[in-house]
Length: 220
Image 1 (cartoon, rainbow, N blue to C red):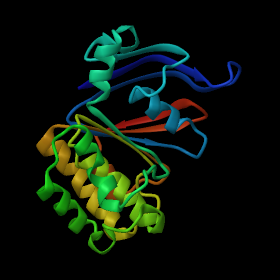
Image 2 (image 1 turned 45 degrees about the vertical axis):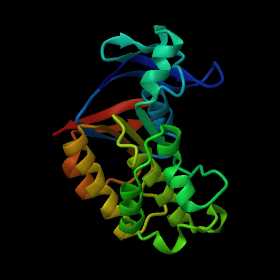
Image 3 (image 1 turned 90 degrees about the vertical axis):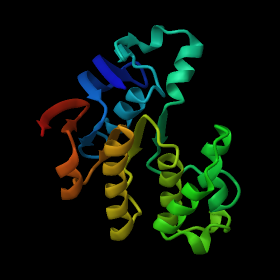
């Protein structure tokens, strides 16, 4: 999938713009890393690129088609191919395992062996049957990430994915992101205030955003 942002501006109050004149092109299979301080506009940019919010000005193209000009049914079909992981885990009532498999159940394609693989890989076996309100912050974050990874989406969008993760899970996630790009040909967009060396090495482009504007682009 190709996502193009053309002259994107966005304001939440109609007065102050949190994004200004953003022009970017994201193509699969690759990883794009957005970096910048808190409040720089990274999350807003991710939500516009992942079609969660419509920009105040500018156009978003999906495979050369203006997304917000498409019919509702086509927009929903495109959205179904995108998985978004929020910076703070958003989990539903129930066990950790229930949350992990929820996306697959909604799409009617549950794969128990894949579920088991990720539970074991991220060290969640002992807590898989615990209610999510009993999980540590790191465990809850791992659950939210696995829930997206397990869908093998065409586009995976992660906002501050390494927050709350320990060093082991951080390394596992970087490996898994590299794998879904190589094997699933996915497009991965990541916002992070910290640049991990291993992540930077596999990113197609590092985009620095400050005060809603692109300050620097580094393409590998």
